[in-house]
Length: 125
Image (tube, rainbow, N blue to C red; front, side, top):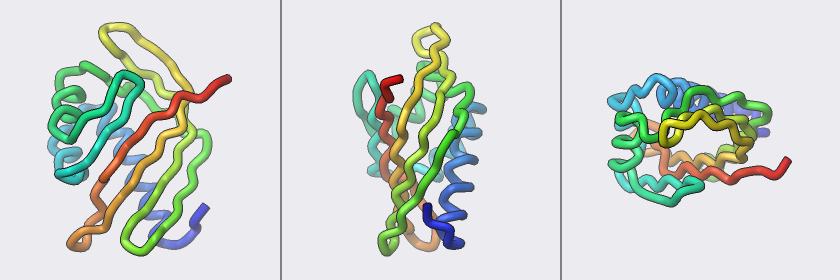
């Protein structure tokens, strides 16, 4: 894990992002998500606008992400964060719990961190 100040900043930003997603705070998320961000889920992949629509409509409600492990690597103005989580979500009206390794890529742009990629990989138990 990167224990630098930047690494800690990214870890805290990621934790806040999970809370914003749970509370469907799409205005804050719209500012966090890079215009060209990509989102990879078990059901497909899409861009920023569709992800925001899904969160707002409740198509996927990220109710709670329990973070078990987190690591971050900083490469110049890019941060790659790995979260091993258990995600409680409502998908298509059904509450589901899955273990994931989530990859988050953040890019520093004009003094702010922007989420450029969010990818869920389901873990085997």
